[in-house]
Length: 90
Image (cartoon, rainbow, N blue to C red; front, side, top):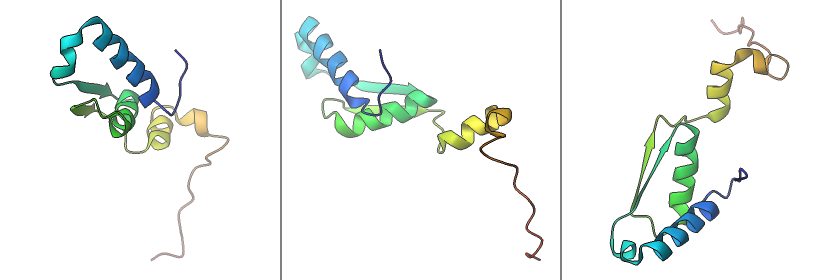
């Protein structure tokens, strides 16, 4: 499966398939769970997919860029130089 920021589309296809296999699922509650980056994607999918009754976002970073740079500071060393102290602020 290819990554897409329009994560509601693959989630919708999964729901389509699940409901075609289990028709009584339409009457039951459906909750999407996302962990870490999956939480960002699940939240986005829940915003667009009205067949979901709930969403759980577990360990979801508020700022994915900051989270990635925290875990792998060397990855951003060329594009995100270390902050210099502000000497004018006292």
